[in-house]
Amino acid sequence: MKAAVVYGENDIRIADVPTPVPGPGQMLIRVRASGICATDVKILGGSGLPKELPTILGHEVAGTVEALGEGVTAPLLGCRVVVYPIAACGECFFCHRGRHSLCVRPYGLAHGADGGFAEFLCVPEQIVRLGGVIEIGDMPFDMAAMIEPVSCCISAAEMCRIQEGDTVLVIGGGPLGLLHAIVAKSRGATVLVADINAERLSRAGEVGADVLLNPNSVDMQEEVLRRTGVGADVVIAALGNAAVIEQALPLVRSRGVFNIFGGTPKGQTIRLDPRWLHYGEITLTGTFAASLDQFVEARAFVGEHAGLVSRVISAHCSLDGILDAVEAVKRGTQLKTIIDFD
Ligand SMILES: [Zn+2]
Ligand SMILES: [Zn+2]
Image 1: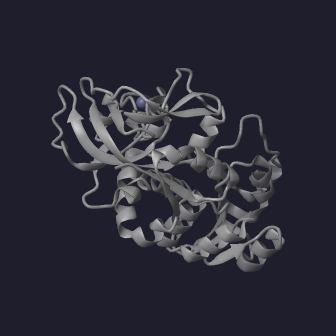
Image 2: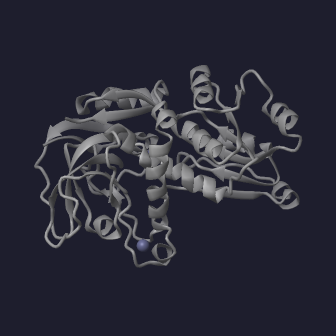
């Protein structure tokens, strides 16, 4: 089969590799759509590159079930599905509490197991056992590839306890920032999106953001205070830049929630005034990935909000076009790019 294989830092090549054969408990998926995530680009750049190389990235995967390994009884052969990417052990402290993304034995698609930048993908036994291969009905495959990123935003919305009437400020109008805006709007929040890229801001407006703020042309502090009186109820930092996160801290109101959603490069730190946290009774939190329940919720969400979610997809390409697509992610000239297979 054809695959985009990572051999080392910034070394990704289209190669012909053996099509995997599903072992006991596993499922073989014919990949039909794979989303390219900023995380993939980060990993490719060397941050969190798996020890065992070569590897295949891609954790936003939809396709059809091609074959079942020994012992798999799920009636899914031939079905159109999306795959929950985390092969949680199901037995540890966090798994017992439904927090699969915090499993103490981190493993999953593009994280030890080969991911979806390939024509076929073998779903690890743990994911199959967990019920992480989920039917999508007649949902288009490219939309199904959006379920994983949406699940991460639902996870953040729950962590931030976003509710009707809240003012939510999203820092960063990339694909995940836009999905945060869509999720927060669906919960009845007023949404402000900040980005220095005018094109991204206008797309944020198209998906329903109420207020668009360009920090290059407005004083964020002044503007957020003017519009809210006390600061935003919730601030979500949907970008991977510690300096920008640090600057955004004072934009949350007292007793508000600040969520660090985007992963920052190793070694970057922020300075924090303990008095701000203490006297403001701020909740400072982070979210990473999503639980299986949130992933299932995201499947329904994408179905119900297809019109808005589809606007976050800005490009489609073939597997051969992955190198150009990765460059575009690095330059920030695309939102979500979906790799199509046929
Ligand atoms: Zn992702
Ligand atoms: Zn576990």
